Amino acid sequence: MAELNTIVPVVIYLSLSFLAALWARKQSQKTSDSHGFIEEYFIGGRSMGGFVLAMSIIASYTSASSFVGGPGVAYKLGLSWVLLAMIQVPTTFLTLGVLGKRFAIMARKTRSVTLTDFLRAR
Figure 1 (cartoon, helix red, strand yellow):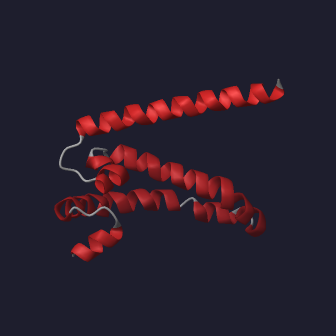
Figure 2: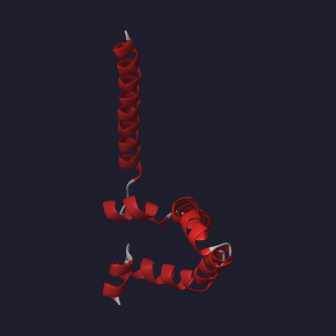
Figure 3: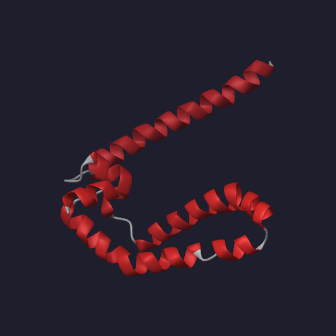
């Protein structure tokens, strides 16, 4: 009986995941246009704005630094390191504000997806 209580939720979860994948595949085939798979997968067909980019940067910074490495370094080096680390967030927004728009315009012109594609096209 205990095995059945474990197997049934796993089978239901896998079935729902499979159905969601099939639905997403049909939706992507309906809306696909001239964008290639790489551009669609990695950058969402260039349809997301700056707000989504900012939120993804904040989420990445929060999970990587704040929960994984930050507390250990703060414990080892002291609270002064936390003040030094706090400058990373405004620096990121300043960099995106100054350079982000120009990079986005040039990346659209060259159809670059990664920084390597961008540098190769220049």
